[in-house]
Amino acid sequence: MAGRERLTNPPLMNRGVPKIVGRPGPTAYHRLNPLTKATLATITAVAAVVLGGLVGPVVLVLVAVIGPATVAGVLLRLIRTALLLSLPIAISAFLVNLFFFPGGEQVLLRIGPITATAEGLAFALEILARIVAISGAVTLFYLTTPPADLVVDLERRGVSPRIGFVANASVQTVPAMVERAMQITAAQRARGLDTEGSLWRRVRGIVPIVGPVILGSIAEVEERTMALEARGFARPGRRTLLWSPPDSVFQSALRWGLLVALLALIVARVTGVWA
Amino acid sequence: MTLTLQAVGYRYAGADQPSLLEIDLELRDGEVVGVAGASEAGKTTLCLVASGLAPRTVGGRIRGTILLDGENVDAWPMHRLSGRIAMGFQNPSTQLSQVTGTVFEEVAFGPMNFGLPHDDVVARTWQALHTLRIDDLAERNPQRLSGGQQQLVAMAGLLALRPSHLVLDEPTAQLDPAGTRLVADAIAALAADGASILVAEQKTDLLAEVAIRMVVLAEGRVVLQGPAADVLDDARLIELGVSAPSAVRLRRAAEAAGIDPERLRD
Ligand SMILES: Nc1ncnc2c1ncn2[C@@H]1O[C@H](COP(=O)(O)OP(=O)(O)OP(=O)(O)O)[C@@H](O)[C@H]1O
Ligand SMILES: [Mg+2]
Picture: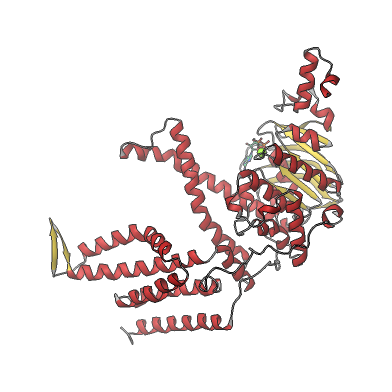
């Protein structure tokens, strides 16, 4: 990397890093350190499961999801995304527990051989509350944190950027796969393949799409790996960072405090001190 | 700064025959060497081997010798080679790191990996963006660009590395004539600064413009080589699955029609 005179002595630039790189987010919640937001999401999700019952998760959703989402101005998007994310599992979990809760006695509704019981309903609501808390916490994190920010922040703390990269790349593979599936579907349809019509015909139509999608993704991952290595990604040693998200003693204390509280809660539940 | 391939052969893992055979090639300071050949002739494979990615990242088995300024690079790990030889792939979307939110960070990604000083990274990034006239894309999300724009961003990411050797596999596949022009100029500028460049291309028009020498591959072997002007005018090109550049075709058509080609210049 030497002697590229014409490229090294530019007449133009003393422009710094563009303002948009690492620009603080629009609201106080966005501006929290990415690790703080990740910690909040994780602890909310785990605590909802550990707490159980109905009141605990509902309070968590109000305090740790709805409240912050309102501050961040993403409440409507959060509701929409979290619903989309959790609706299928929420509905099936709700129905299964409502109708098939073992040992329920107080019958609410009878449809042929299956019965909905009051005990089943109570339990189904509890499950629902947990699912809402988990999907809400995760969605809040994604709506307020660009994944690249978390990667940079972890890197500054000494976590290998490779780990952040792998996590981030796997998340990004999903939309790419969906898009590829749609392209291939369109191409197959253009060649006369039936992807509409009766269910059976559609199932048969899917088979020739699945192969190319998966093979294409594997080939793509291979090429991505090569391209990264060719740009020195596997080089050991510290990378230069253009910016890193600000952190504060308060946030650090908050993270540790929440973590200790969660551990205390788990210990209390496991030992039966608090049931 | 010379990259030398001596009697190099290469076989992909699990392949029953080699994809490259007996390749002798030298890339000297400031030289642009073109690689042409039909589909499956081995252009991409030659790029991977010359950049060191095959076998280091790709696997497979290599024969022969590769020298960088006279030094055998057999034992070099990829990250050491990548400080000297950069490689650009045909598909720009797979070249984006996907961990960056802006084009600026994407182009800075390579220099950042090498731990260069902050100000140096920033200066190189602006310079590379400027060379390809994409300064105004700096703040955009690389994921949301057109294929052609992504190809220029990927190319800028390579320029920012300021490699002494650059290997490009079909760098203009997604580009319109204006984009192709920018890449051709960038290649010429890099070569003028002393870098040596290997370009595999189907578009012989680009090669006619930038290449000094050329090799043509068929079934993994070099079947034609020499000064680019001679190779591109060679009558055997068509049998080898390579179409002649439009300037050559135009001249031949004029000759066939009995028109003096010199008069076409006006
Ligand atoms: N990963 C692989 N494993 C096994 N064989 C491969 C692999 N990649 C390519 N080949 C084979 O190596 C030979 C050369 O392929 P290569 O991709 O280098 O050709 P190319 O000249 O770049 O073609 P194109 O113009 O289509 O890009 C072909 O016969 C191909 O089938
Ligand atoms: Mg190829």
